[in-house]
Image (tube, rainbow, N blue to C red; front, top):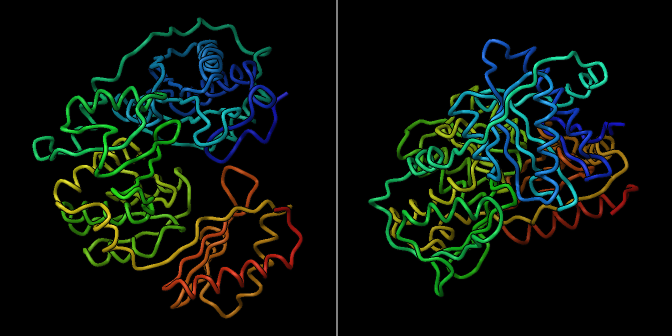
Length: 422
């Protein structure tokens, strides 16, 4: 029996095999094909399917594909890939697509990122209703769809390398793990085309990708982790120099340095809820050129409005080549504010908990775009429910470390007045 908890707002995630197994994958495949026939009948030629490096992913992929085929829909199996390669395939070939992945969740988790053609996400919880009324036992007998292996690597490489001018890239040394998963495989092909030395001493910067390649975190030449918001501000400046007056969407937990830079360089700063579906949807709606999240996700108009860790990697190389400054210097120029690492809390009822906290900020500048946001001249804080886990997440940023320490102490003391599970 399906667990309702696996159906999130814009993806499906659960523990394998307790909540998500081969039978579940088959049912999801059938429901996805049924949904596409109902909503994309005029342009439904086939579905692109890829998977990440988790042990359970190939197994779930096979069952998922069989579910799609059972509804008479053809499949392109593109194999072990990054999630942004699936986004590319959906946008470039104009096909619906699916990625078997649980992104950053632990290894015993897995899931599905599903999209209509042109990387258009939808409410995956709708599939739960379809499965309930359209189970395999009641499925009409149809001619099974065809499945074919498809190699998209050449087209994908041409696409991502179009973001930079290879001729102007200067030689650099980079610390990076390229030995695991789909990210390593595609990076090896990229590195063949660039004047980079990998994993040698005295590097210019380092980076790490998450398991499915849509998120990236950087360290500078001193080994210091760079706040993803600072990278976002560097990208904002980079794009606004090329596309004046462009619109840039940023998530509610991004540092104030991002809208500061956008405004300084004549762009339009647009604040949005955390989450790929919200950022990407707002980018499409506004025709924005760049999207930024504090978690290390960066979205690009030229990438079908989708996020990509690999494109972000290439852009930082281009930024460093053009600026001719070290990454630590570029970071220091934008380090105006002080923040805490995001703190997560398990609470019995996230919405009620946040409302109780909000009662203590009456008279403040408050908004509810994404949970509770409180702003003053000296600091801002955001307390919001997680989109993917049963958690409440706290972010605080202040104009100096003394204010930051005081606000953190006060808000933690306030939270301790309520009953919650740490």
